[in-house]
Length: 340
Ligand SMILES: [Zn+2]
Ligand SMILES: [Zn+2]
Image (cartoon, rainbow, N blue to C red; front, side, top):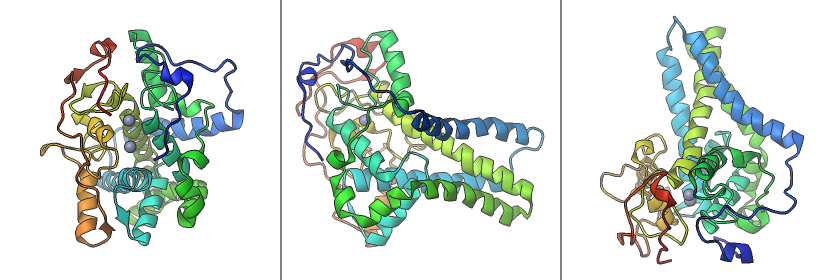
């Protein structure tokens, strides 16, 4: 994990003020904005198309099952592959498993692998303070600022012109991992495959072009939209609403948000994760269901994963000085500095 270099402005951040803005903010190019808009909006619009097509006809079991399978494969590709394996190195995977997880995550329409890793490492280096690429506290801790920040943390940051340096944050993948570099560079191809596979599966199973089209919409576009918004909710909601039982770094307002636990494959135990980012399991308590950790455990039993970091080094179980429910209203209170 790269060591964060704090600027004077970051060092002086009080936990409440809007983040300082550059005097001459850079503007994203029209091509980049258009591409991002297409990736973000098209899958969401497909939900309307799917409902329109399903009106009166219902949704077929085939479409539902295909959507569930593609959601699980690509979702676990992001949580187990992109996040726990490649970003935090919570375990070591056999080379072929590493490739499969990286490809599965690349089919989630969340940007290329190396940029995903770099942005997320930067988020951990500067959590909820200047430098964090997607903090909901960017516009301050007043109610209006938090609502604006919530939109920024969920989606707005994707359109900002604040590039994260892969050279700085993901040099391990960029320089020493040719397989991951190739997979990352082939991101457009994985997007195409992510849409073509449901279309082909729908056609093969139903034997009709209509079946191929509905599978394309539900198991392709709608599945992509759902996973995108669940992942982005971890960036937005899981830094604003929920419980904060664990000790984290100063200014870090990550939360545990149980309603998203299943859909996010355990990633919404985000306070647990921020308290020990290298730990393979994010859900701490026995009732904190964490499907990603269960899959890593299965890989370990099969001998496909080794050196799994199950035990946090320290710090877990230590309650924050002020723990408890974190809401829009209570989050305006002064943050409690953590131990680390
Ligand atoms: Zn976070
Ligand atoms: Zn993380």
